[in-house]
Image (cartoon, rainbow, N blue to C red):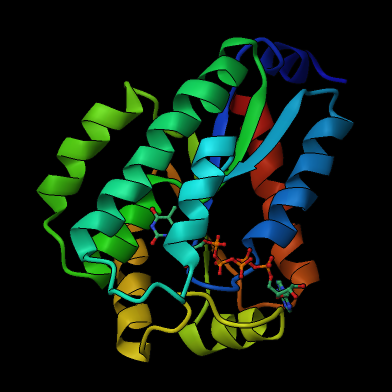
Length: 218
Ligand code: T5A
């Protein structure tokens, strides 16, 4: 093990995985977990919305398709941030404080893409809620798995029935994808775009290179 890698063990890194439906976030987080564990790092894999008992209850309501009333866009936004506040307080911050690497399936970039670009809510409103919920916690690195919407949707469909978000129209998902791409353009040093339309082995080859680079610099 190199000196650089041992040094990276001292400080927890917060890595987020973002992208549209079915682009391969869960699959590739597990791949990255194994990679980092091979370097002797303590790794915590978690997800949003969710990751704690309370946040998982909020997730269930957010994804459920069977409510008799329509969930308002503002309710959706507040629930996403309520889950995030709990997740940060109970799981993410304590793990980072003890030097753990936290790999999180979705975070605030998803809120900007889905609730901002997708639903059309104001980005400064999202920014205000972010300030309240995140207590200054920001990802050190974000891997944006990007693929055309139809590829992600067909992969997601192969996994089971659609949830409330997956029932949206194509236009919505195209706006979400544009949202993620615009975030990547605005934060080029944090956000690394990975071509998720490639076959899995090629995606993982790219992630392997990116993780090795991260280990050298963190
Ligand atoms: N949401 C979330 C918001 O609206 N606002 C927010 O702030 C947040 C945090 C739930 C929903 O919540 C919304 C967005 C979401 O709609 P989720 O459960 O993370 O979030 O949603 P999904 O993206 O739907 O999760 P999936 O599990 O369906 O997709 P993944 O994790 O991206 O994809 P994965 O790894 O499960 O892969 C899907 C299938 O494709 C295959 C896999 O083997 C699997 O079968 N696959 C590939 N096949 C071929 N080539 C490749 N390169 C492949 N990569 C994966």
